[in-house]
Length: 398
Image (tube, rainbow, N blue to C red; front, side):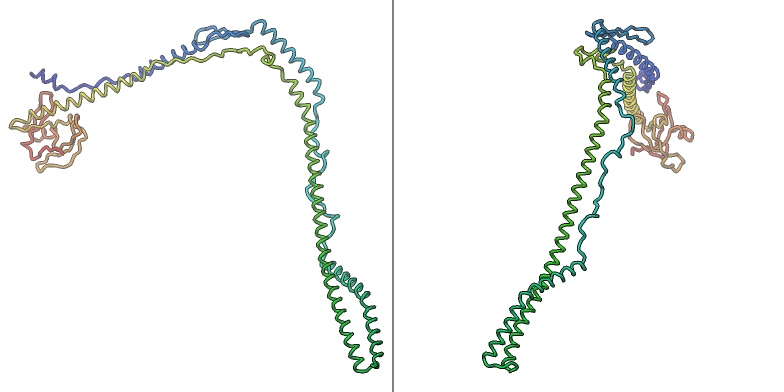
């Protein structure tokens, strides 16, 4: 019976630890062998209409590639090489045409950055404008008075004759009044001429200022256009000079570039290996070892959980008697925390059993055995159990 219970309630043994070091060594050896296999697969003999590459395995992961052209292709290649040499000969003769000195920017037309205003028409000053206006005003007045004065003198003579013929003697009041009235009229004419002269002077002053400004702007625009044309001429001269300097270099570069074989319609040689690569995956030794370790761990956890259920069943059987023995062996518990002490001195703890997360409160059988041995007994597996009816502590689920 005891043997049966031992086989039924026996605690599970943990699985052996995976041999990761051995797996890593085996994985490394497999990787090396895989690399060697890929190396052999990716070094085939290659044949084309123009050449061939033969691969020889020298052992110790060393290979020799023997490359050769077919005779016809080799003959064409030599012919092309001779043509290239002729190009190089011509290029050597053209070396003397290359410029040997630095580019001379001083030979180019000068760059015009600003505008020379030395020959520009000066802007009229206030003094000049006032003087011009006064001269214009005087000229206008003099021209007017030269035309007006004869008619004014004639009007005076005619009025004098008319008054005398009318019987009004010179010096009489009527004579003097008539002559004074004529004088007032002629004075108004002179005032009007003076005002017109002033207006003419101002008009001429404004015209002179506007004309000077317009002429200066025209000169400025013309100078700007000339400057732009000079700078464009400089830029064109620079472009032409650089092109003339660069042409011999470009011709020499063209001559020194040998014609390619492909351009002669001969095709292109393989010049070595040029085949699609092949790949081989190494056996997943390390992954398989890790997967087996995880499977063993899951199986062990399941066995531990089953063992806990059996132990709970055994505890229930033990507690059905008059004496209430509960499993309190420290080796069956985890996450043990001391939470107090009973009046008689027993330490009180909280824990959960190895096979369940459920928490309990009670004592540790090993400690009770030292104080009250009669309250402790051992089950058939050697685990200690406590009779809580003999203690001043109760075992409780939390």
